[in-house]
Length: 222
Image 1 (cartoon, helix red, strand yellow):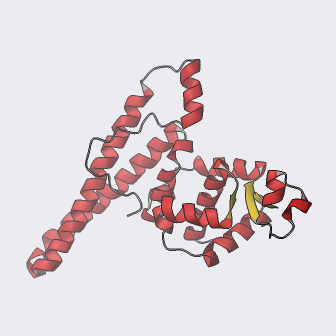
Image 2: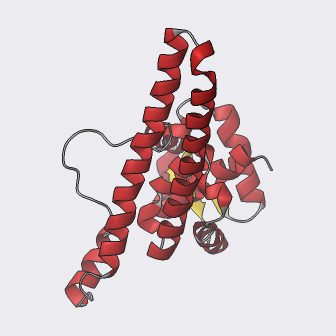
Image 3: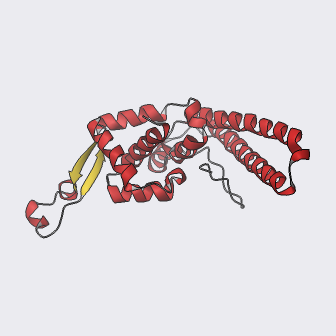
């Protein structure tokens, strides 16, 4: 399995954990909600779906079966296939959510992992955020060293491009710092009572997400 197919499977399982979907709905959600998949096709999605069905992590149903519609009511129209997460698929996705190793910090994976932070435990979120920050800080140091060594040999436009790249990384590091501080502060907030627990179940554990105070956050998928 390639790294890209692995993160696609992760994203599909995560979306189906929210609700069953048709293939078209899945593709639309992947394209609009998860930036790394903005430019992928049905030819990429359906082999992934078949592999997940073969693994027993999702099942195919007709929309009639999913909605309890009788076969007679389908006369004259074609039933659509709906994909539903199985119990073993849910368990497998939760195992993937708990993973916080280096793959979760990389450019291709981080944006998708971040998209499912609402379903991820706080400790795992912290490890992924801190790992991503560490990776970007290493990258930033290398970029600064490279720029210092080659500055005299670069024309003005190449130099501006190098600076633009550095500024993008610096901006994401600042954003990560804010997220990490908010997660740490969230750990020390109230011990939730029954009402707070009910609200958490409805909206997900997003207590560590900082409030947006204007401007734009960096896109984790960039």
